[in-house]
Length: 171
Image (cartoon, rainbow, N blue to C red):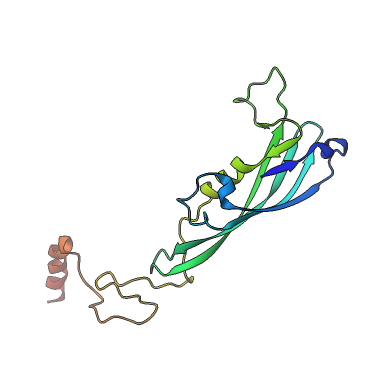
């Protein structure tokens, strides 16, 4: 995923919009991620500030996930913003010390930026609905579909001795 940016150097501060849709395979080996079989769309704008190029926008994709609570399969859309500064390193600058990402001066390859943005912002929890009830811890029934007949209050066997103390207080 590359952006042609050389025209921005002639127009300091002017935003140049871009949009691009590619299959996730352009990001390399991403087969371990739920969005690996879907398209990746990036859109936003870049501008030249007189020294560096500022690229900002959003990356959008969708993936096949399971609800974190009830394990129901679902499609989740992920939209994540990003912003990065690119520049041509001067001979006195060290690439590791610079806060800019070096590039050749004509095209900016945002492939690594997009891959890292998606991986870092992977959702930690995906729910089928905000009030998902999950699965019964005893029988595994999906509590969103119907309640189960399991006893609702079961004491952890490791804490059963403490339960006897509560029972004595009731006497």
